[in-house]
Length: 63
Image (cartoon, rainbow, N blue to C red; front, top):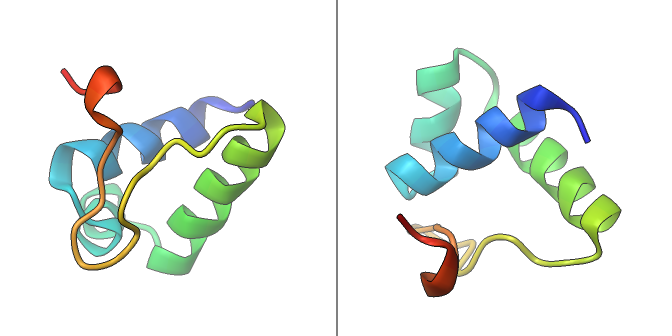
């Protein structure tokens, strides 16, 4: 697990969008998706719901 992966995850959760998160972080959207996918594999758990137009954390994890 790397700190940038957690930053990416939080940005997606805050913006509800991979595209908006990538723009806010000044990185490419495919990089955000790939890093979150790696984090999910490492943890053995899906961290995001609805990977379509709106994405976010599952309800029990939301702030």
